[in-house]
Length: 207
Ligand code: DC
Image 1 (cartoon, helix red, strand yellow):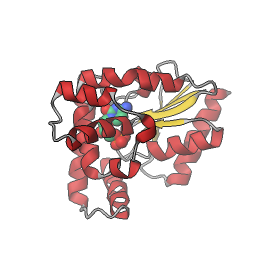
Image 2 (tube, helix red, strand yellow):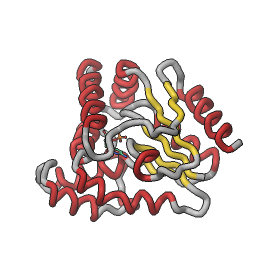
Image 3 (cartoon, helix red, strand yellow):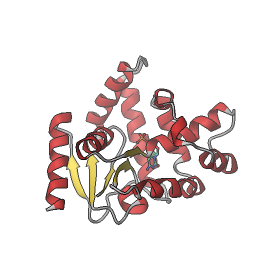
């Protein structure tokens, strides 16, 4: 079974994907990490985020096993990932790795922006997770503070709005629900309720 979870930043899609994967015993790929790691390599090399050639080389050179999630989850890297994610050549360089992941014999759970539309249009279950920008900003601010980053809510809300605009407005694989995705709005749901709602969608699809 392939489960595609898409949605904007801090919608809850990552937590839902991780929990579904654990529940069904499936491997999970957080595809945002691929874009974050690509941006990280560029920044570490002192390069520019809009240097297409360097960004493609960085994307091609990624090794999933070497990801240091701690270094990739911060605010700066989320923004930078959104910038490199708008480069069509970078997206093209990351497609094979993601499609390969869907071919695991048991299936897989992937979360991102274009899983149901581009990476795995054949997915058995597609869920588009969303929530109001204000709720997402509150969650992201809490998460970043928990990681020791000093952030304030208005800045994070501004980040979220800009990121939504960039991710949904780009020409290459824009953030949007697949035609056959179920929409799950988590604005008024806590993590447990959001997971239960996602699980109900999966169970319904599996019949
Ligand atoms: O899911 P995330 O917040 O870790 O993603 C960071 C950025 O990476 C996101 O704003 C856009 C980009 N991204 C993408 O373009 N396509 C994906 N499948 C996943 C992430």
